[in-house]
Amino acid sequence: MSSTSPSNVSGPAIVSAALNGATIVFDLDGTLIETAPDLVGTLNVLLAREGIAALPLEQARMMIGQGAKALIARGFAAAGAPLEEPKLSALFDDFIVHYLAHIADESRPFPGLLAAMDTLEAAGARLAVCTNKRTDLSVALLDELKLSHRFAAIIGGDAVPAQKPDAGHLIATIERSGGDLKRAVMIGDSVSDAKAARGAGVPLVLVSFGYTDTPARDLGPDILIDHFDELVGACERLLG
Image (tube, rainbow, N blue to C red; front, side):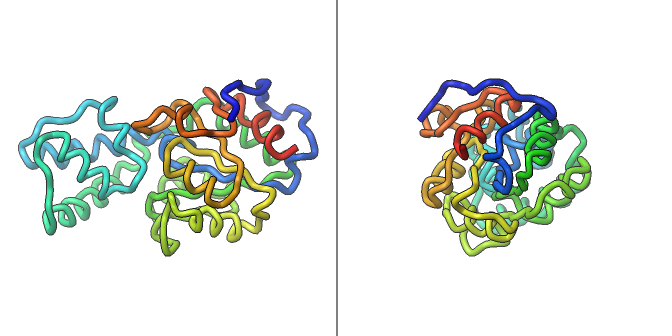
């Protein structure tokens, strides 16, 4: 593991041939996109309907990453109102309706992401998304942000037999994007991303600014980055 950031690379800088033909796979929530404001906002709408006080954004953002149903369950438990079926499923349906209507009210790419994507693509890399978010929600979000067309594959947790941390989810994403497992890098923020990458034998970059109860540096990334300005250099090092 290296916690030392590589040289900053932003914009269409000259990069090595190591990136040509590589597949760079991103987690979505907390890695590509800061989605917490809209996800937690929807959770708080449900809490309010049940007469329960809203959760602070900074507390609830760490509950994101295992899908909407898990977020609802964790959020209500944290608010002192644990849920059982069928109530959880009913609230999940309500969550999806509200979230789809507000999916990109405040959600935005993390700083430096777009420039890093430009550089990776210019160097011949393909990009893909491997997320536990439902595929339709993932595509809807990326469509709203005008980013969907930049990914060779967007594979949500519903599109595979088992989602992250199962390595098969990452392997399927690389295969469906037309990539080579031996020429891929996983970019994520959580233990699910770390376990999937390790299981698939794929190098791992974790971001320090995502959604995780355990600090990213403690999850054993090959490289930890604090800003997307560092991403291109990190991928070069792992693929070179």
